[in-house]
Image 1: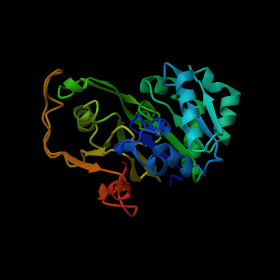
Image 2: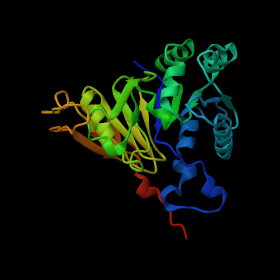
Image 3: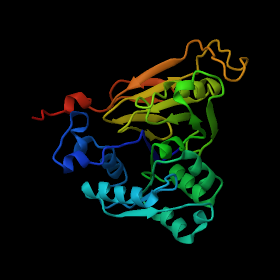
Amino acid sequence: MIKGKLIAIGGAEDKGTDLELGQIQRNNLNFFELGILRRIVEEAGGTDCRIEVITTASTIPLEVGQNYLKAFGKIGCTNIGLMDIRNRKDTTDPGFLERIKKCDAVMFSGGNQLRLSVTDGGTEFLSILKKRYTEEEGFIIAGTSAGAMAMSHTMIYEGNASKAHLKGEVKITTGLGFINTLIIDSHFEKRGRFGRLVQAVVCNPGSIGIGLGEDTGMIITKGNKMEAIGSGCVTIVDGHNIGFTNIADVPEGNPFCIENIKVHILEHGNAFLINEKQFIAEIHEGALSGKQVAVD
C-alpha cells in the first residue's frame, strides 16, 4: 500500500501575483482558500514544513527557484530549499541526498520532462524519493507542467498538438515511475493537447490519461484516489474499453481510428478512483462555484 501522495499540476499555477497587485480575477479569486500551492503546504504538514524545490527541468533554474520562494512565502511557508540539479553527477551530491531524506515534500518545477527522466532515472536520488513515497505517511511529491508529466511510468515527451491525429506524432518514453497506471499531460486546454493524450492512451490502453488544465491539479492518494483541485478542469481519458482501433496497422503519418474511448471531465471537488475506474461527483462539501464570493 502506497502511503505518500502525489500532487500533479497542469502548469501556470496561480502564485498570487494578481492579489499582490490588488487585481482579483474571477478565475482565480480564491487563491488563499483554494490555491494549489496552499494545498501542497497543507498536505505537507503546514507552514512549518520543509519543501525542496527541484528545478532540473528548467533552463532558467535560478529565476524559477526565486519565483517559488516568493510564492510560498506569500502563504507563510518560508522553509523552502532549492535544488539546482543539472546533471546525473549532481544527483550523487551527499548534501542533496541528505536533504531529500529529511524534507516533508519535494516540488518538481516545469520545463522539459525529458531532462528530468534522463537526469534522475535509475539514480539513488530517485530511489530515495520512491521509497519515501511508498512507505511514509504524509510524504508529498508535487510537480508542475513537466514535473507533473514525468511522474508516471509512461511519459509523453514530445508531440505537436496540431498533428496528434497522425500515427507516430506523439513521442513516449519512460518517466520517473512514481505511478504506473497513468499518462499525464499538462497545459491541456490552452495548448490543445486532447489529441496527443488520446494517441498516448490508445497505444497504452492499460493506462488512464490525465489532462491537466492550467492552475489545476490532481492529488493522488494511496496510488488510487485522485481529487481535482485548482480553478480549472481535469480531463480523464480511459481506454480500457476500447473496441476497434487500427493504429497498429496504419502507416506512420496517417490518421487512425478508435472505437469506444471514454472521457470524464472533473472540476474542483470531483474525484476519480483509478483501480475502479469510477467517477465521484463530490468528495468535499461544495464545489468551486459554491465557494466563490462577489468581487466588485
